[in-house]
Length: 226
Image (cartoon, rainbow, N blue to C red):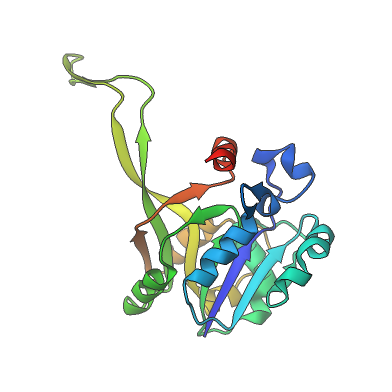
């Protein structure tokens, strides 16, 4: 079976003071809240999932009072401690089965990429974990020098652009990897590295599409005006 989990339990410290009033995924965009955009994207994928779970912690009562009636088909799970991106999955361990495929989505990302293609890639490779990535272009603010081993000048690049595969905050995991978690603080990068060292099959799906990390203040502000 397929389950989808949206992680919204963080404090949103980078977006303070806005997140003193409301958790980051429930901040407004031009046409709806961040969480509403994520849910709309999920629904547009035509995935056949049997459970959609939102993990909350910070201001849970406010979230449920504002959105509980509008999200009746969504299961809310409240974390009583902030345990990190992987650790908070401990709170849903009783809601997943060992053989489930579980899509994990950070509650501050916007994308139009295809989850169906990512899931097909995950299954066809019989992966334990699929990390969903996207090529992200970074432009240097300054001119860059090409310098030889003895300090000789070999060339000049004016504000070059490099492309790097970045972490999107979207993952596909076997349910058994969630059920084995302990109640402890654990970030996703550390959990995945531990599993890699144990010999589990971890692959990367390089997706096509647009991507915005709304946890970055400037990117959030840009999304309000574009």
